Image (tube, rainbow, N blue to C red; front, side, top):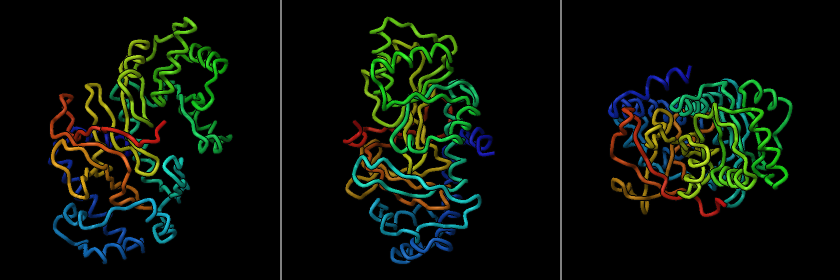
Length: 330
């Protein structure tokens, strides 16, 4: 249902998209006031009016949400009655102590639907064979029989990006030719390393079915993008998001980094104030479909800018540019 919804809303005008954000934000603020003690207290302290005529203006009254705020709030920030229950998640802790948080089914569904949509922009459908050069200590600890069943159902095949010795990458090359994937997904630096290894071995991988390379998780530098495009001969599409903030933006086939505006509100702040058009600043995110544990004005720690132009693909989804990632990406 979420996927069908997002297929339609991507073609709305920017004004229609903004109105949808207003409606969903008003619903989220009402929910947080009524069911989440942390936000009831925060709204009262900020003088926020949940019945205000413009919820987007009311949103700016709130202080920014930091990782320290989330750790300190504990259970007061969680709605345990979320339909379908809650799933415990954690960040990698690359910028300090790992952050634990909860996801509800509604948010998970929309994040996955947004990912499906971004794949369809390049002709990749759900169930097409996808090789994922991915993984982290967090995900490895969760690798179990249930995850294996899920990956087989979705036709996704995980190659561990944290175990990339020459001998292991030789096995990855063989696995690639056995699978002949439609899509490759992973960290740009890991895929670039995989490409360099293939060239070292004089291997021309079977790319008959390959439609796109999807990268995320760190900054995609120009030299790595060129290496991937030259070797695979297909578009390289960059995605931006995080475990806690959700699926925020993704490049389309024309290179525009479209925000998932139906699900997230992105603010760019410079010295605590709204940045001017195309001015770089900190990326602050409000996830409109995170009800089990709302993330309202969450500080990502990343730097980006909003682009006040319309992409030639015709989609009404606004554009952004991630200028740089966290300093500890590598």
